[in-house]
Length: 390
Image (cartoon, rainbow, N blue to C red; front, side, top):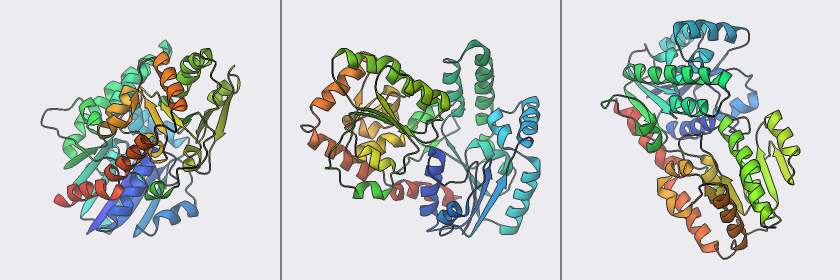
C-alpha cells in the first residue's frame, strides 16, 4: 500500500517534539507502506538530514516557504479568519504542487501531521488520518494568561480561531489522533468527534545505556530552549525554586541544557545571582541526562506527553514535575514526584539528592516501566491499524 505523509517540518534533526514523533513513526510505518513524504519547511533541509529518512521513504519532497511570502500568507490568512499557525504554513502555489504530487503518486492513504498543514489535503479523496498531536487552542489560551496586556488580545484571538479550526477541520478527515488522553480532553469538540490517543515512544538506544556512572549534576532541566513553555519553566526554576534551595545552604550544581537557547533567556541565566551552567545545543542529550541526579520539569503551559521526562527516567534520573506533566504520563505516576509550589520543588530536589543512591531500585523500576510501556514499535502498531482500517 502507498502512504502519503505531509508535515509542517522535516522530521530531522530531532530537536523538536513533532519531528521526533514523525521520524520514529515513519520508521515503523515503512514496514507496511511505500511512503511519499512531503514537508512544508521554513528552513533549508540538508542532504545529511534527508539521508536519515531515505531508507524509509520512496520519495521525499521539500516545499520551502520563505519571507516575504510568509508575511503575505499571514496577512491573507488573518483576513480570512484563519489561525496564524495555519496561515503561516499555507501557500496556494505549494498546494497546487501537492495536488499534482498526490495525483501522480496515487496513494492509498494520507497521513497529515498537525492541523498546520491540513489545508493542503483536506479536499483530497480517500482515507485520511489527521494527527492533531497537541491541543493547540488550549496551549494558546493558557499562554494568553501569562502574556502582557498588549499581546494578550492576540493569543485570545488565536486560541478562539484555533478552537474553531480544530472543530471545523475534523469532518474533512476519517481518523483523528492525539498524543495523550489529556490532550483529547482539552479539545472543544462535539461529543461525536472522537480522538484516539497514540502515545510517543522512546528510542531503543536509551535502553542500551549504562546508567551506573558518576553523576556531577545535581539539578537538570533539558529541553528545546526556544519553546515558550520551556522558557517559562526555566524562569520558574531560577526565580522561584533555586532561591528556596539556596536558603537551605545546600550547594547544588545546576545545569540548564537544550537546543537553540533564546538569547534573552541565555542572558537571564548568565546574570542570575546563583551559579547556573548553560549547555547550548548538546551533542548528545543522553550524555547530559547520564550526568544528572535530578531532572526537574515544572512545565505548566505545555500539553500532552513530555518526551524529555521519558528520556530522563530511562537514563536513571529522579524526576520531579508539575501535575500538568504527570497528567500526560498516567502510567508512570508511581515513579514521578509531583510538586506544587517552589518550597515543595526545593524540598523534593534536596531530598532526592541526599537519597539518590538509596533510591536506586525505584529508579531502575521506573526505567523498566518506560522500556515496557513506551516503545515506538508498540505505539505505532496502533497508528498502523488506524491508517489501514480505511
